[in-house]
Length: 423
Image (cartoon, rainbow, N blue to C red):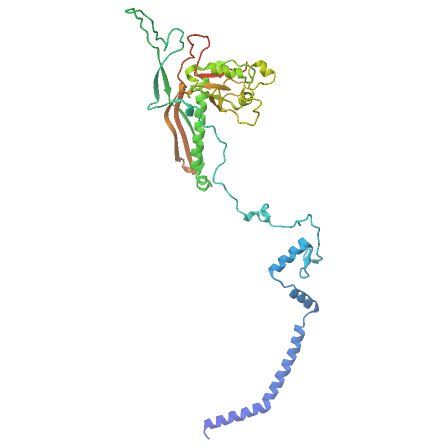
């Protein structure tokens, strides 16, 4: 027997010995140990009765989200309780459900709302209107109602005119015509010349805005500023054409040397007689061109303008509209056939110039430079600010130097007539 055969024989003997004698002993030992462990596991895995009760209750309460929300809604709105709902107090302890009475036919209950920021309002975006709401300014009155406009190529504009103040003995300031016999002696005459000078005055202003505002603004800020300042400059210019002093600015109609002021018939009011007196003092040739300008406060007494003091005192015999017409029909748009314009630029009721009748073709306007808008970021470079400068150069004045005395009659005539202030 060689060595390999010997080794094989030994292994077979050892295997038979282990299987017959040693293996059963090991198996019994292992089985006993496993049985002991099984008993211990049974003890460890036996649930606590209270825990098992809670677990069973939890298992019964399983539901999807839709059922849960519906159960809460039914309880809050209909007092209908679902046994799977568990109610807890502020300390987290289970408590009995609290029912409440409906405050109205429709139950009032907690609801997310956009009206309260903390209840959901923060998630609702706000709407932004891309248009600025603003109070409308009056449109230009003097320019758009017949003023005579010149384009100025230089700072000064000289306009020749006739100096004429009376027709009592001559025309055109000195022109006289004679009826003569054949070959009779003729007497020479000539018109009296004068000059109307327009000198450009500057109306200017500026505004500024941060570059961050320009970039982040919800509106086209620069476009709006140009539009807004353009309207404002038109307003200031128009106001000067009516009220300007002529010193560093246009000479306004209400300060014209040819202006006629008519005595008012009643303190701080307007009578029909006042309208008649104004109308009859306007130059005859101007009556088909003139427009009425009046303050808004004049409108009320104008509506009830009576025909004379006695009629006015005895109950407002209306002339502007009839009593039969009442307040149903729209007001007439003219006075003696001429349009009227309401404007805050005329004086308040009872002040000089609260109402006037004007032939605006006798008002000269010289435009040297229309409204110019310049933009600069250099001035505010270190502060990230942009500047806008608004300028225009213009002048205006009535060209007639005095009211006209007619050939017959004592009342002077003019293209510009207004009421005096209350005495």
